[in-house]
Image (cartoon, rainbow, N blue to C red; front, top):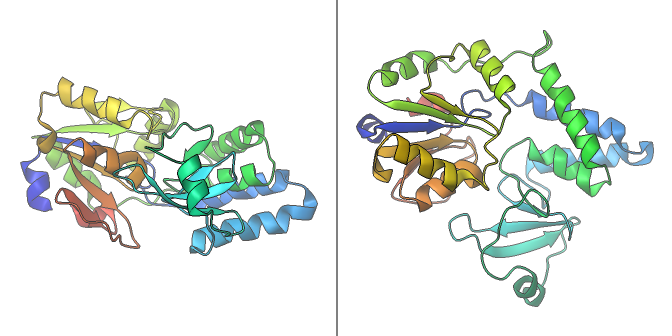
Length: 275
């Protein structure tokens, strides 16, 4: 993997869960949403979220949530075909319904089909199931962002990351592509002491819907071949699958491991190990 990185000319990084790996803010976000739920279901709300984190719920990171059907879909990330589906209570959706409802490639749209690529989406999906509004989720998300700039919250810096990026910066293009808003991105980079290390920052990227479009633009701008670029992130749906489909190399940060195999894919438990 290190040889692949050294030979590359362009590295495209994600931010949340990649350049920092803390997760406390996801729990905080969930707690704010839980407080907005009816008192009679707040305990159930919390328990469902905890089950998701532990992997004992149909909804999990790596799945897709069908808001209309209140169902968790298992999707092949490279073909975008739905291979299985379960209702919130775990009841499997039969094969006939599966073919009727989810034939062809699935299109993520942030409205009906929500890609659960990282920890931000678990509280959101829980809120949707329990009847909270989009306004509830947006206000709670913004309140979480405020919490993340307070003295109560601190980021853990990845050992050696700054030095590695400084070295790579001298001979490669480093680009940041994230769904976070620009002000949040700049603040987080300053706190991590990683500001001024990137040639360009793409914020509010609307991954995975816009991932391929943005990667194509980046490759064109920096005049590199797909095989000379590497996408690095913790979200397989957002950063890894689209890159592999375009012929890029990819480094997938997944502490629990992954059974997927691809010639251009490298899996590491932490970003520290990638460098």
